Image (cartoon, rainbow, N blue to C red; front, side, top):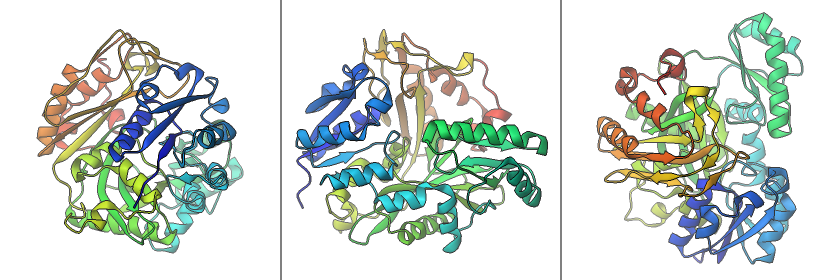
Length: 456
């Protein structure tokens, strides 16, 4: 089956570079869009074509429907890949793409709406018997209503943005007197981040692991899961490190969580790549948390343990082809992990100053290498990291035959990694690897509260 001639990449930074490379591997031309401030990025340099779509402000460039679609149609692209962030989970944009006879490399807008709205997604999971955290029936309208719910299920509770993700619009509430301020803050942050101030409540599960299942589904009725990722190392609900497989999962638990994730996929008629996220408590019970209807930052660890290329699979599925390893009967469906992979998010932030953003010009760049080491980045010497966008500048991914091998390989790679001219989280990650609890795999979402790293 023929793929596309040209794909527009509606994103920037390392993920734009990642998609350009996938296009090249498939023999498809890439069209990268960029804002004024991004004209010298690596993705622009590597792409087959590049076009400016507006000024630095995201609302006038990467979030501008008309400019993105105009670039695609005027330059002869047949499809749009959104990466993650920006418009990746915006159903209205997906409909605009389709109305202009372009192909969306992602799920259908109805699936985005159903699973992107967390309260609707939760109701869907309850209907098909997937375990869910006790939560409110739909959005909460006031702090008083939130307090009544909290009194029924017991504190602590978690306020979450219905249309959100990435920890934004989220507040923990541990006592009644905290509710009003937390509710107001969550709604304000949700409105600013997503244009939707609706929030809902969940019972807060103490000391859980954050475990997610990567799924793929095509238009031929095939759906598979590609094992799990453990994303428990977080700061303020923002993931900092991910690993696959999870140190906490047995093969039986992996199978049960995988079945639950695929039940969700089939219930909503989902196609393309997605991730079903769960909380795993200390008793080994898991609860549906949310579904991300896009590729995720941490997809490389899954690629490393399953020998798949998730971006290429996304493109093939959008072009109408079946999942490649199902179409090729000689390949095994990679439901059993091979080895262990860890991803470190390298951010332009200063951990010694409460992770304050650190934009600036790269004066030196030395990337680690050797067996089992992968770096996804858009950095190069002389590039200026702007203050305008997300602080992620690189992802270091290591693979080893065992978790211990992967950790040792990560220490070596982090020691080799040098980024001059800005502050980064490299030193933070190196210190993290010396904490015995991490080495033993005793990791929950409150890990950094229990083991604060103050030496960087």
